[in-house]
Picture 1 (cartoon, rainbow, N blue to C red):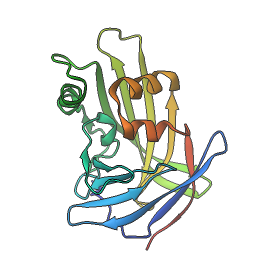
Picture 2 (spheres, one colour; picture 1 turned 180 degrees about the horizontal axis):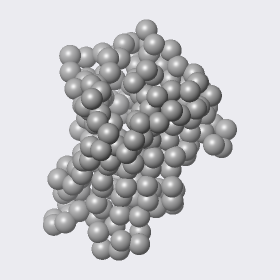
Picture 3 (cartoon, rainbow, N blue to C red; picture 1 turned 45 degrees about the vertical axis):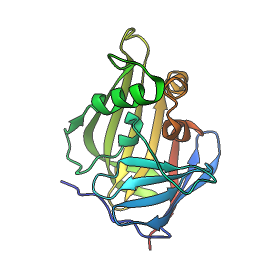
Picture 4 (cartoon, helix red, strand yellow; picture 1 turned 135 degrees about the vertical axis):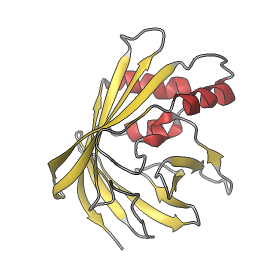
Length: 200
């Protein structure tokens, strides 16, 4: 079983997408119960829960306050990490829809996560022991509309080292329909791999 990592100010991870775009995620603040990250080229900041590493809030550009994130995409990482563990944050996603889109009843999408295996994954930053996580989502009224995102988490690096987005058009539409800012940030440059990292 792998517990949540400890991040420090200045920890940073640089990635390169399959389209050649390079960006860096960096820890810019450590609070009592969360870490604040500057992610990709977004002008917003994101707060990660120290215990679970779920994305719990966003600090939008020019704002001093925080805004809660309810979307399932904020649970890409959910500690502790154990092979075979599954989670299905339908309640959180339903609440997000009701709060933001005023939709009552079943969620528009069903989301499921599963830690499938431990693998040795080679990326430009090196060959690293990683936990492979599968994130699946489908439309509740049309199961043919679905997509998946695969993510590999490395305890050594303390975050994900590779992400593969399958059926990108489905995910883009999903982020648009749910107004999921964090998912839109993840999708911005598509599939990617870690090319370097720095731990303080």
